[in-house]
Length: 191
Image 1 (cartoon, helix red, strand yellow):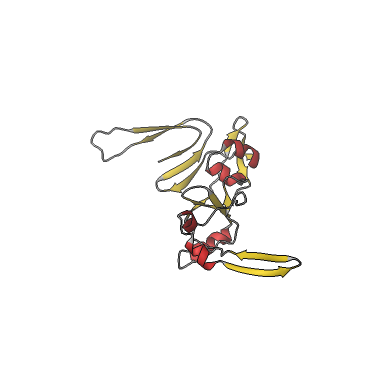
Image 2 (spheres, rainbow, N blue to C red):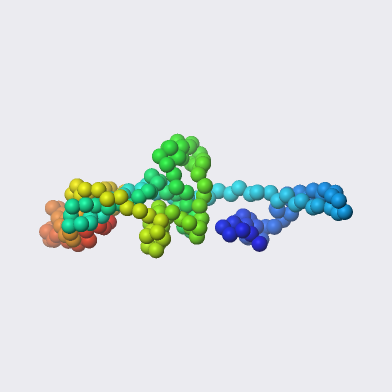
């Protein structure tokens, strides 16, 4: 039985136990009135494919448009695999090492955390776990400085404002001259 949070390597999960058998070493030591058997099993390293996400934190309006709140503390970057069962919180220095790596292999010096353990604020927000984000995250309150908009990439924008917003998009080259209306909540993302 493995401890909580541990699992077999992917090759063992697929039934490739022969590799473990061929690389295992057995050492026997004589002790008083018996023998002790030590079985050394190899530790297999296998690559994880992570997607790197940059933290963008916009304030959410509170208290009659006089203050905004943001989640705190959040790492600058979050690396998450496709199954979303693990994650790594990265600093700006860690991210710089990843971008400068000529092999596209990121030397991660932080611990790889599992989602089902205490995930922390960033991962709770990422997987939209509201119960855990209430317990893991704190908020920082600051004066409201007005509407804020940030480009998220891939033609997506995030914004924070005081009230529901209607965005009108006009295409001057269009023959029908039809405007497109996009209605959004005060804290939203649009494409």
